[in-house]
Length: 137
Ligand code: SME
Image (cartoon, rainbow, N blue to C red; front, side, top):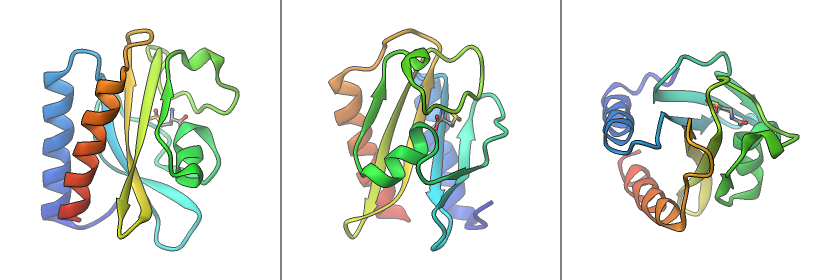
């Protein structure tokens, strides 16, 4: 997708570290706005491959965060009408937007196989990760 090699290597390293370090992070990936289009494109990730490499703004949890500019924590994915299922093992999801110069340019998306695993500590930690990511883009 995004051919920015050294940045993508660093983003992949972040995905690997998060997935390996935190037991309730089972799929970890980045989506980025595709140029000026109102769609997200999948960046580096670890976990099960997904068919959802392009997500229109508004669709799914990720597409909603592209519009809302807000964290989206889903304790139970079965409660969501506007949800894109990637794997039947996923119970919960957290999506945190990434801002560069105040603009929502992408997000980190984490799926969990554990029900209701995400706390405010995850939100604060992942917001911190996203500010660090923004600084290397
Ligand atoms: N579940 C997401 C789609 C991306 S996968 O989790 C990798 C959503 O509803 O937007």
